Image (cartoon, rainbow over all chains, first blue to last red):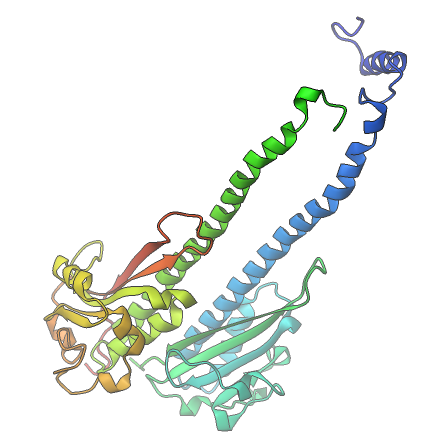
Length: 203
Length: 200
């Protein structure tokens, strides 16, 4: 065979091509009735493999979003606990949430609730987490949306206002984020988290 | 398929019969491992949040209830039914483990409460799920679940190098039933120094 030694590639191809032609099977040696099996297999498997691949990708992004939202509430509540009764406490909280959100689409940070929690197992009142994005003084909750993230302190309307925040009271921060699927496999996934921390003493 | 020799027919289905259970087992193993890891991470975050809060104002009358609330709010859903014990303790151990005496009380606590005077309070699973603000009353803790290691005057029993700790043990159940033992016991603890006294 001439493929011994340093035969150039085109020569190898020619030799193989020649051998195949003489064999009457142009592509491979499978019997006539098995031709195209691999194409059919590929047609079945490719969508499945792509589905799994996109599923992994989507799953990782959702997990990442979930953790980031949890971190946003944690950082926000910590900031609020330290800011205590500072007049611009809510502004500080929103700035911290904005910083932790990093490359998140701001418009998807649908709602931020800062509320006076009754205990460490509490959830924000339903009146604060639904309805228009506006603070509800009667429920002791400040409610903000993406539009409030860049506003100066004076432009924020609080519902549970800093002068009413005393050391030892529980400050809750709740965030809802709408994750939109990148692969269009899923409808939007709503992710919410909260953190409750006691307001610090003025030491 | 019929192109295979007569002696090879069915080889694929036998291979599949061997491989599929193995693959499913591995897949379920991944899921189980992921969930157990998640529970363990949640437990670590929860005991940390609990001890930070307890160290912040350690002489507040209801501080142990605040720890209990943190644990109830932080542990993964099903795990709360399977808590064996929660210990709020003082320790000098470099690793931050509860003392042997406290661990012995925890091992025998069942669903009730107990402790070691001046050293720890132990809350069993049932107690942890049911205790509320009404249980943590009385200026000297007499008759209350936190009587052994009463928060009132708690700072005074802390010596040099002593730290405050929160430890929890709960059972994490497997969901697929394929793995042995039905579940796994997860324990974690976190210790920290007491924050300065705001009134001092």
